Image (cartoon, rainbow over all chains, first blue to last red; front, side):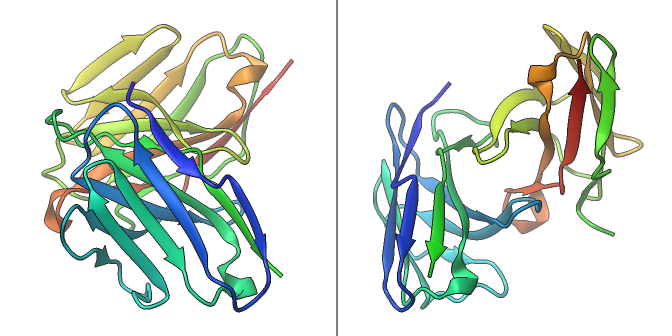
Length: 117
Length: 112
């Protein structure tokens, strides 16, 4: 299957700092990438849809100024958590869809565990 | 009604038994259905996809789809302790741009 690389895998930071998470599709091109957040014992919640070359589409209740998404190329999307606070501590997972495949299946990165002190 | 609904479990089965995981969805026009497995602290891994009514088998896994009932299930035969994980049902929602919506997941525990 397609490989999605996500870095870093774990971040511990102080409250008020910004954290950048990278998501790369390694062997395919992804016009669309998706960012999910998962709290312990809960399911994945879609935060935003990242579209190459255009603005991201955010889900209701997700602050676009706090969670900045950039999808500058067909293989890279970044999520920046600005001025992180303890309530932002969560497992962030990116995913991508292979644009060559007429299918909605997603390939996931390995996730980033963010802990804000 | 939630868009994708699963029993949260936990579902406990003995090693070697059949584990049956169920999922219902609300979007009648959905055409693709996916089962992901997620180990604790890891990201989801695609294990099955199904697009047509009926059964689809892949090794010890069988996905069953009934579009009329808006129901999709996953059977795991000869369950192994390594199958212990959370299983997520995912369905694209065409009325929301094809986004993949996940159920809350069913935690499966296979006891040796």
